Amino acid sequence: MPIFAFEDEEALGKVASVDTTNVIVEVENIDQLKRLQVNHLAVLQSSRLGQHLIGLITQVTRKRGIEDIINDGINGHAPELNLCRIALIGTMLDRDGEKENVFRRTLESVPEIDANCFSLEGDNLTGFMRTLSSVSADGNALTLGKYTLDEHAVAYLNGNKFFQRHAFIGGSTGSGKSWTTAKIIEQMAGLATANAIVFDLHGEYAPLVGEGIQHFKVAGPADVEAKRTIDDDVIYLPYWLLSYEALVSMFVDRSDQNAPNQAMIMAREINRAKQKYLEENGQQEVLKHFTVDSPVPFDLDVLMERLNEINVEMVPGAGGREKQGDFFGKLARMISRLENKISDRRLGFMFNGGGGLLDFTWLEKFTTAVLGSTGENGKAGIKIINFSEVPSDVLPLIVSLVARVTFSIQQWTPSQLRHPIALLCDEAHLYMPQRNMADSADDISLDIFERIAKEGRKYGVSLVVISQRPSEVNKTMLSQCSNFVSMRLTNAEDQGVIKRLLPDSLGGFSDILPTLDTGEALVVGDASLLPSRIRIDEPQNKPNSGTVDFWDEWQKPVKDKRLSIAVDNWRKQNIQ
Image (cartoon, rainbow, N blue to C red):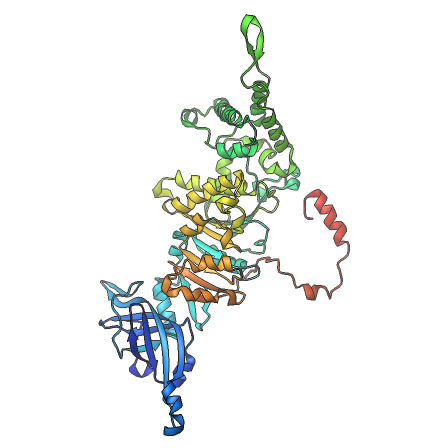
């Protein structure tokens, strides 16, 4: 049955003027006028039966004509003109074929003069928003909170469209980004076979616990020393998982005049090292088809030995005498860089994970734990990976490595066996920067994430980009996001990014961005269809947002030995 059943006496007023997308309504009841709020929704009678037009209130006016004010003293009264401007944004159909209550972002008709206009609130608003989300009776929609302008109306999002079309969550520091992300993670964790990876760069999602949530951390120096493994929720990301391009960006100095030769030798020798590994481990089937980018382990000692041989190689020359080979001395800088990386204890998660990382079955064990959904890995579907101990200079490379493994697994899974997975990318501006701000490591990261943004949907990979600086996030990423949850933004450039995403008729809606309260968001996109101002519900477990009450803390006693403990931890590179 139709969700709208307005009575004529409930009307705000009647349509006085109509153009292509805007309607002027004359409000007869002054009490009704006082209740109206800008950016609230309104319903207008359509000229067609079984249709209602939905609009957004953009202006409310109460005025008296100049001639009335002049004549006020003569006739003793001055009639008032109470007006409401409404931007039309869509049509609600009572029936469309076999479907009931269908909303379309098109204007199939315009209201007639003197058509009734109604305010959309309370149960009508909740019913309308449920319809937008295509919410089934069992309530499986993604719920963020309540509408700011009507605290009784629950804000539903279409969970399918939110992840299908990629999403962006943004807002200035302290506006509630982590809170919103935690609310979404919390609901995902409640699904039977949810599957998602959260890139947690600062460990702020550590308080999120529950049956569907598991925490991993990328191995730090202390974890390597203690020989902790994936069974201890510590993960290693071995060098052989890197693509050829990523290995070159890490080991070859592009400014070196011998860089092209070094890259060529690297490709050839890595290929040989992988071939040797497969031969020694009897992997004949893989041996027939592998490439330099195939995730096949190889021994770094074997590679280093070959590079050193080539660097000092002597070949037969004229007159039976030996001469220096083509690459004599040309690999010295690359070998030094490689030795330096291997000995860097901060990179232990890549180079010092023990012999287990060279086991042919290691990759399957890793993907089961990190990419498996609830039921597959025996633990949980939401995997929160803490990257806080990864050095900043290789962070883009390492985060994108996890993303590449995820995409590759989905890509090489037969379509009938594929199970969707979401990547929640916190602090995205650090590894998805604008191209003009990127270095070689960032370029590798951008190539991977741009490919996921463009092609991920058909392989069941979704991106949720989270950042406090939308203007610094790569434009390709944002252009591929069809859902935006924007918290308070005070920077004009960041506001501009969000404003450009709104339709022209709703451009003024984004003017509220700097005035949003903490925990309040402007939600725009396919998942909600209509731009909505929402107050986010409090998550059960709040993330460590890092917000410190300075004034209060400065009035409390200082904790004993805090500085000596900090210095000790700093030296050990481990928080005790």
